[in-house]
Image (cartoon, rainbow, N blue to C red):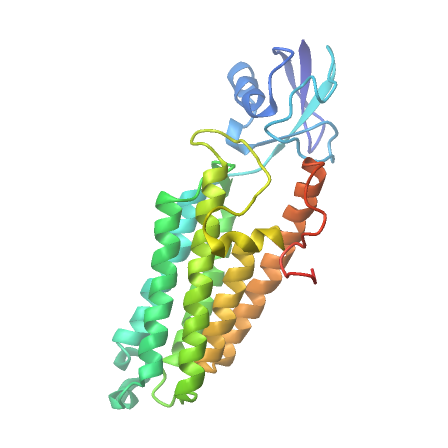
Length: 301
């Protein structure tokens, strides 16, 4: 069939493009740029049926969209792109450097006051922060399989500002010479909860990875595997977010640090937004999706 390709911003035509009737949107984007060089490269394209319409999914076929010969498709230019993996590596490597700078070189931040002996809780907090972000880096390299190859370049600066900035805020207070640690009982109980949530988060990431064969974009209903920590899938759609929030709430209790709690709550808000969107998509995509599941908090939301 032949489709007319237009700019979604001003409806200016790029030209006409003959394409296979059964092609999917993911392949169509590359084909359009191949035939119409004035169009944005495939990674920058967001295809729509209307100028202000919803972006089409890469897995949508032209047959399923009921497009016929002579129909119009609109391209929104997403702007400069960067790889998801690159963004993740940058946003997770930064906190390691920033936090450990405050921890290992306190004299650069606190001056002469840095001579005061650091508390055991501050040592434990540094280990927890390091373990968390080393885990995230290793998951990015070896575990995660991304649905999309790229994201807008602006996300690199936005995400890094969030993670690096909050890390400096938290680290400044936890490693401060005047930091007062809570009771040992509170520290050790919270540390145990932190470790449990970190293991749970990692277990869910492995389960999600195993749902998608390498090199594919297959989507399946997430379900628990043999690891008991993945049983949270029976209650919520995004248990990785549930465990992540639990880990940072535990870190906040362990350190009794208000900036850490602010970071936990800010992350919880954003992850709740993501979880609700994923939950809606799961229920829409899979007709047999478990109706008793919530999005992120069991029995609540």
